[in-house]
Length: 216
Picture 1 (cartoon, helix red, strand yellow):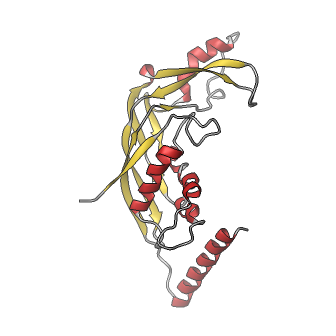
Picture 2 (cartoon, helix red, strand yellow):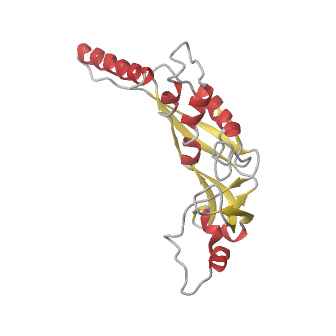
Picture 3 (cartoon, helix red, strand yellow):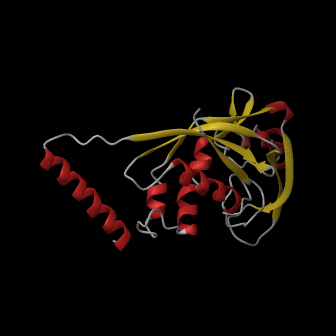
């Protein structure tokens, strides 16, 4: 076990002992707030769907691709959406990447605190399934770096914007401003979707910015 994880375990144990000694049930305050997410460039989708949309009998691979490529996107009804988990997945990587010091606390343990943030909801893009644009590329589909390439089409959304709700347990480490600052950095260094900066391909799609929505 790393020193960072050991420190988190010790901290949790101390808090538990304090609560038991006080004879009261410990009530953890939950901080909830909203933030606006907006695209800085197009996003590509690459959801696995082959098990849900089988090939027709005798259908050629290229015909199957042409008929089904739009299934790589996520939908609510017939509208393309971006699930909140896309942004959720950027928190731990950006925490490790930045390794920031927060309020004088353990700098190397910051990613664990960010991993505790929850983002809920979905962003509706306003683009209908029948109107989705495609991005075509020849890619290797064998799982190896080299090999024969085939044509693939990826659903592409050029612009999107929406509001999501975020929450975390308040133990005196994070603030809404800190969470949003890290998400904003994640939008430029990690990204979402296919061929994003944080993927093995080191692409340039899926960049976004985040703005805190202040109450009042």
